[in-house]
Amino acid sequence: MSTPSDKALVPFVSVDNMMRLIHHIGVEPMLRDLAAYIESDFHRWELFDKTPRVASHSDVGVIELMPTSDGEAYGFKYVNGHPKNTAEGLQTVTAFGLLADVYTGYPVLLTEMTMLTALRTAATSAMVAKYLAPKGSDTMAMIGNGAQSEFQSLAMKAICGVETIRLYDKDRAASEKCAANLASTGLKTVICTSPEQAIEGAQILTTCTADKQNATILSDNMVGAGVHINAIGGDCPGKTELARGILERSDVFVEFPPQTRIEGEIQQMPEDFAVTEFWQVVTGQTPGRTSDRQITLFDSVGFAIEDFSALRYIRDKVKDTPYHYDLDLLADPDDPRDLFGMLQRAKA
Image 1 (cartoon, rainbow, N blue to C red):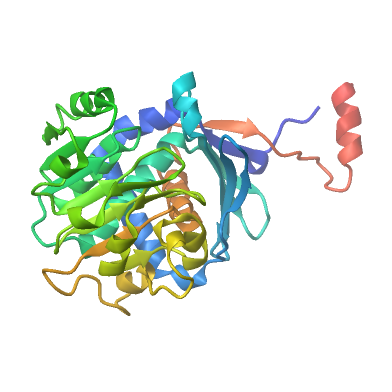
Image 2: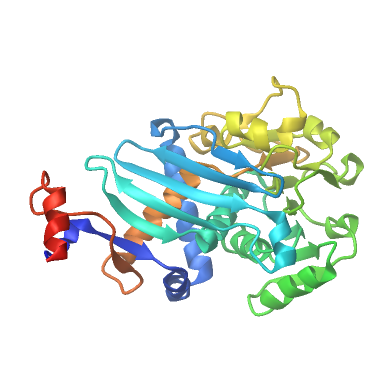
């Protein structure tokens, strides 16, 4: 029986190795690195295949595939969203991803993406805030203190210079968890008793709640002029976090409109509601923040190109390191036409 050749072995990054890699690089340096990869791919946005994610909805959650390609590499992420999982001791969101070579079709990376998605989501938020948030922003309200909250906070610190995080969650234990996890990071945290209290003095307002319903986390009269809203909780039809009036007063920036109109805050707006694709801001085709009193809103639902950026980054970082295993994932007969012969020799 022949042993697999190097070209048939696929690097696999397990959860354990992903955590080892993050600690090796450092959380904040890795967030900055990921933001740079994402920003680079936003500059190349027009090269990519783009489609809304392929979603399979059930009464308890959603399972999605998020594919894209830049013509040289192909990537996809499998991801679920099940809010009921928390009560059962399970993660709301889990994911894994694959990167492949377009020329051969062979996979070149298989990796966990539960941890990686948290990092890339936070890196995207902060990369966008770098363009849209008021200059000198030093305080963020973090409304919804679940699995994303620490990553979002650290990304805003590492990339935008935020110093204070004002925390609110309907479950105070979640806020206490977040504050404890951030205690040694250099960030000041303030646990608040209401969303209204959380947004006091904050220039950046991040909403990230888990319940899949049309909720009003921020009402229209709560949001004053001159703030940047980072709305990242919307990720499926029928789930919103912001009052419609906020959208009407804001300049809204999105990743890919056909997907955001299905899953984002703008699903509650008419089909012709004007939005700006954020890649156009990155490339200088469209202005971002233009005045001190402007309300900017990043209606983020996550897009496949951001995952592609994260996959590229992990591929580059784990090469020639101990932070992966080589999987015998691909059949590799000595004669490509003799797959059955390979099977027979294995029996011998």
